[in-house]
Length: 394
Image 1: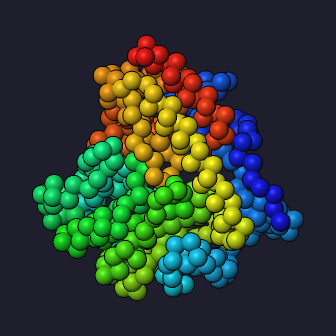
Image 2: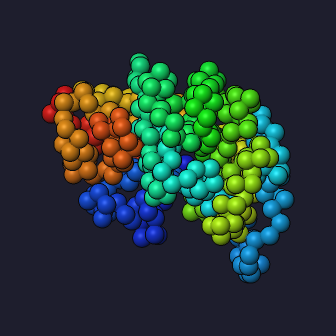
Image 3: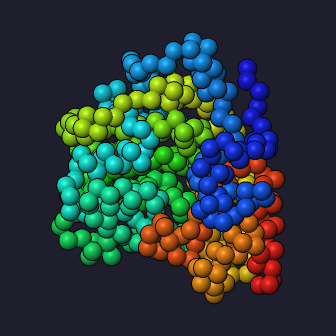
């Protein structure tokens, strides 16, 4: 029986080739000595012991050849999706990508041509636009509306934007950076939009296990089963278990006809599984991993409450309520400050590295994104620093 995870443990990640901590100073000017890294979306927590045990078993064996026989991994994926999300997945529907940014790029290659439009609901995870543009496709930004401090769909406006050149819609569900858990009705509206405009729908559900109490994630394949012939699902262990460095993700294609183009893109890209990642992911999707996630979400919810209450006490600053993910989306528009001014206060005075809102596309200019997946004492320190940095507004 594994001991309970200690999410309060402070682990020094500096000097470990951590993007989050070792790139904080060169990219944001936040000093490594006493800065707080709250940008890259990985956690400052150890993964469940079962993942570490899988790696130790590989090290004890001492041979590191090519990975073969994905049955155990596929069985683990299918068990997780069935027990945690009520979704039955066919083994033949599962493809392995080198993470879901790679998965997005593979879908772009498989289902679109250069010059085609790919629709994003912005502001949204910045890597989507990067890989779409790099592939010579056009990013079509359909901006979300805000009602009562929550993002909502603006379908009528989006309908009017479509030109007929669009071929794909990339959905982020739950939404990053807005923290929304889309309702079944909202998902069906997105599905209808894709049918109306003849779009392949790629549903990136990487944050689907990190849902705050009182909210429920709906799998798109279950919310709108009638669009299976145009639906590609993406899931992963990486965000759920803090193993992003293993670079393994799942592309799940329920419709047989949609599988062939993806298989061709995978072959053309020379994509093959990372053996370490496959073993880690297989170990994570287990009862022990499930218990760890339940404890994690409860801890993250505590961090959420602390941070939202703390930043919302700053005049002119509002936190969009976090329904899922561990990424707080904070709006500084009410301060009256330009983007450069409030960002400088966060980086220079509070010494916190947070993601810049404009990188997420239209609608992000007045925001910063803060990663709350860190020991609670660090979150409390960040709140204190932010309140001091904006203390003249009190």
